[in-house]
Length: 242
Image 1 (cartoon, helix red, strand yellow):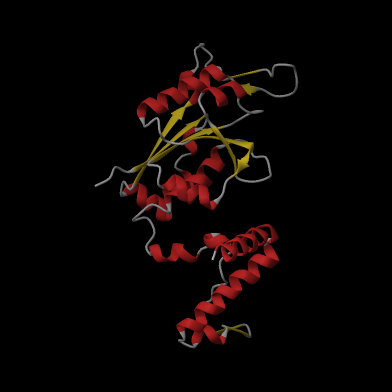
Image 2: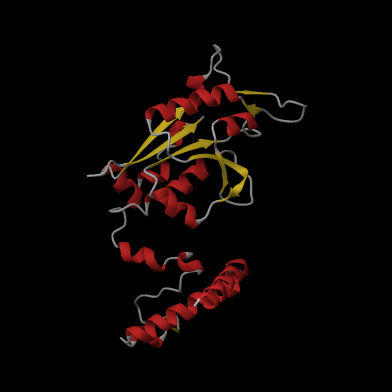
């Protein structure tokens, strides 16, 4: 039996974890030891009696910056407790966007080390020295990296074997194959004058599959033109290769 997936989180607020990760499918998987979670309280790695983790920005400016020496000690402790091959993520608004492809890749990595930014951010030197990959979950600023860490872990953990009740349901989710998911319906057959599309009640699996695929394309084209452009380009390239 393979060891559980390990999530390590360096944070100023370990009491926030597991938070929402402790309920629903991720919570059950945590109880079943399909994955494990370990937090590293940043202040435990400070060297002064006040347990200082930040200082003023070099060159001036507002706010405070997370110290590289304190962060490095916490990161090194996490690496020593885990596996040096696991991806190391610095959660910051200036990172590249997190994607479903990342979640799929990291779910196969065996573990993740996530470093939660705070204040004005982390000293760039520790990001470079510890080979951290800067990741953002969106074009907005949060109070810290803890919520992004939870978002990433939720997306990753649900892909682990044994976490979801129906692994087949993952195959047609949004972003699989570069398209958004098709609309879903359930009983009652008619609700407030709105009926379930007849094709879904036909029992004709081929027609249902075609309808769903067309709906995925329609939704993606209308809602996410960026994804649609990528999908069209890939389809065109695949057609040339054939």
